[in-house]
Every structure is written in C-alpha cells, then in structure tokens.
Image 1: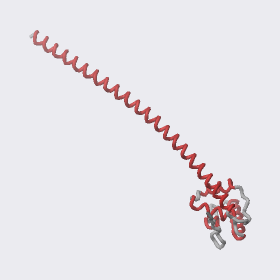
Image 2 (image 1 turned 90 degrees about the vertical axis):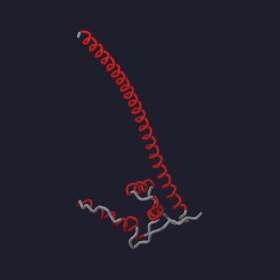
Image 3 (image 1 turned 135 degrees about the horizontal axis):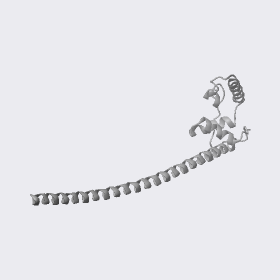
Image 4 (image 1 turned 30 degrees about the horizontal axis):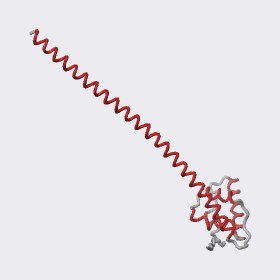
Length: 166
C-alpha cells in the first residue's frame, strides 16, 4: 500500500509540475499580450494626436483660405465697379459679419455687392433695422434680429448682383 501511495504522490507531484509549467506559460503569454496591447495603445494614442494635429492644421488653413477668398472677392467687386462709389466699411468688419451669420460661400458675391454698393433704400432700410434692433435690445425683446431679407436688401429694394468680366 505504501508503494501505491508513493506512486499516487509521484503522479500528483508530476501533475502539479505540469500545471505549474502550463501556468507559467500562460502567464508569459498573458504578459506578452499585455505588452503588445500597451504598445498598440501607445501607437494609437500617437496616431490620434498626429491626426488631431493634422485636422487642426487643415482647419486653420481652411479658415485662411476662406478669409483670402473673401478679401479677393471683395477687391474684385470693388475693382469691377467701374467708377461707382462704394461703402468704405472695413473688409475685416464685413468678414466678421459673414462669419457671425455663417453665410454660405456661394452667397458671398451678391451679399458683398449689396454691402459695398447699397442703394439709398437699402441704406435707409438698414438704418431703420439697426434702430429697431437697438430698441428691441433696450426693451429686452427676444426678437432682436431683423429678418434675413432685411439684412441682404431683399424687400422692396434693389439687390445689386456682382457682375464679372473676364
């Protein structure tokens, strides 16, 4: 019986050694996977930072291109005026208005022409709209803005369209 117990003990010790070896192999495999994932996480973090930087660069370039296009367009409209007198508002102020109102680029030529060369009725309508807005602000009215048609001279007045010659 002692021999039998010795054999069982030897068998259990051998099984324990096998399980310890398997556990050690699994721990090594797990550590390798943890390191692989940490490396991948670092790579992805660096890549995300690079992409965010590229996005910011493109966003900034887009803003610069929009501004340059706006100024070029305004100068082209002024040069194309053929002697007409124009409103001498700073182009930076007009660009700020375009940005605040989020006007689509396709609408810039007509809007700029109407701002740079307003008719008398447009000028009067704008002055009235500004006075009305000031009154609304002072009374606390929530409708503090004129309609978009008032802002671009679409009611009753002549809307000047840019003419282009090549």
